[in-house]
Image (cartoon, rainbow, N blue to C red; front, side):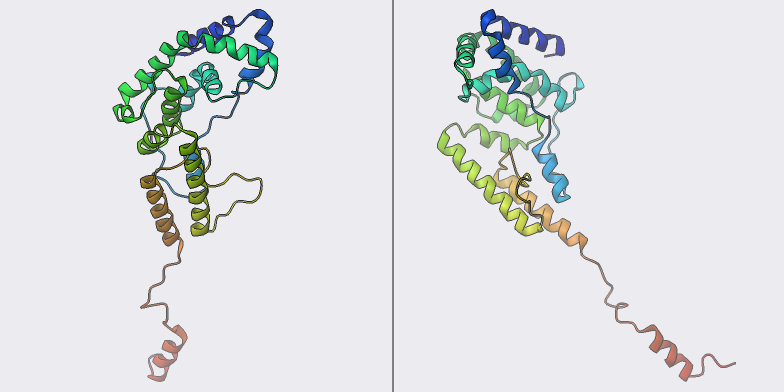
Length: 246
């Protein structure tokens, strides 16, 4: 996938709906506007730790954010598959036209997935549902966000609403526990320490250990052999013994 191909896909997406529905498609597509960021990096920065963010290889040596941006046109199908098909009748009509053409675009997301997993074979352990674009997007987007492999794999297994609810609840628990451990609480309206990502239990234990080590490193270190030394008393001792008399 390159920029030229990504733009061609976007053009084909617009051609998939009748001209009279393209304004509604514009509104749907605007829902995909978001700032590229990594929840893992943001958490590391807030906690002052490192070693959780995972670096992957991307085709043509691209940066993660650049590779993810190429996938943006295809993410409209992810959004529709998740149930957001517009806030108006016009948008719902445009969404139906698009979903009717989804099979045409599946090979494109599969190609991106193949490109990425050929460079990073460990990602192939994630579960893929072949006819769901969102399934491929989850792996690609997870890698672009620097999620550890185990986290991507576990998320790929959460295909039911019940499992997603459990992950969201566990994510909130983890964030609250880390705030208590580190004292870095978030105020109302601020982003929690863990957001838009649920670490696996293995990753979470690694985060906690890094916080403990970071907290320990911040404690002032004293030398027990010198911390109680009274210099003035020693000077008086020497003087009493005549060390400073000529």
